[in-house]
Amino acid sequence: MEFLTNEKLTIVGAAGMIGSNMAQTAMMMKLTPNICLYDPFAPALEGVAEELYHCGFEGVNLTYTSDIKEALTGASYIVSSGGAARKAGMTREDLLKGNAEIAAQFGKDVRQYCPNVKHIVVIFNPADITGLITLLYAGLKPSQVSTLAALDSTRLQNELVKYFHIPASDIQNCRTYGGHGEQMAVFASTTKIKGEPLTDFIGTTRLPLTEWEALKVRVIQGGKHIIDLRGRSSFQSPAYLSIEMIAAAMGGQPFRWPAGTYVSNGKFDHIMMAMETSITKDGVTYKEIAGTPAEQEELEKSYEHLCKLRDEVIEMGIIPAIKDWHALNPNID
Image (cartoon, rainbow, N blue to C red):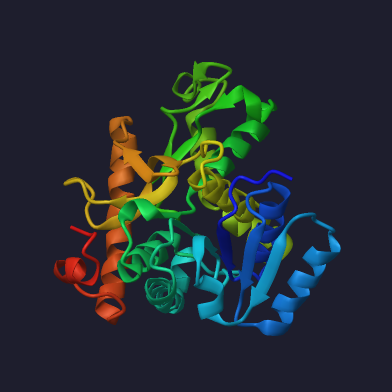
């Protein structure tokens, strides 16, 4: 059986719904035969492992542990969903303090037990902030840490599928940028419908402006809608997309969607946010985003919102002031 790599992949938070789905997806996609599941909740973790053993996957050395040192030692790749889940009535930002503290400890554990890790994908909310905290404390290069942001772009695609009653294959390059939260910037200028720019539809009988604005709200509230329908936060879609991300970092197929990455370019500084990215064996890189003036304004507002969250975490004492970041992580300028 051929795998993408033989290197160790550790899934943090594996007893949860996202983590357990990530594990199964990684095995189905044949990423690596060496997968370690970690979670502090030992009985549930054992239950996940037992179920995966019952799937009958061949050639996989699946291990599990509630010892973080054992889980991280020797790991080349890590995907972490190891934070508290969003519940009904909560925004992603409501999870800030508790998950920020979890991210800080996670970063410290990475630095101590697997400083040679190649890539980490952080997906627990608010992912832009928990990813930033992980990067700072892990001491890694910005190219080695990415966060899940694609879910907003896939939700935009899905809303367009439903509105136009066409298959997803007829819709290209759906994009949201900035924060993975209520202040995301939903772009229309990047998207094409059967080869025609989406901007040519908006404001016409094909997509009246009021309908477009309502559609954007549905995209932004996509996670809330899942909670309303299922009584719990999304787990299948973030699990799949995060494994696609780590597969790209392993040298697999290019990741098709934006990812969260560390940005400090004079316009957006000292922040983790969704950009137009590429994830390869060399890590995550980004390029400048070009949108309409209105889209650029939305993106700037999203950035400002993320800066407020970052500054809240600084005020909590979870991360140091920006001027001290380089001392904590020499890879951060």
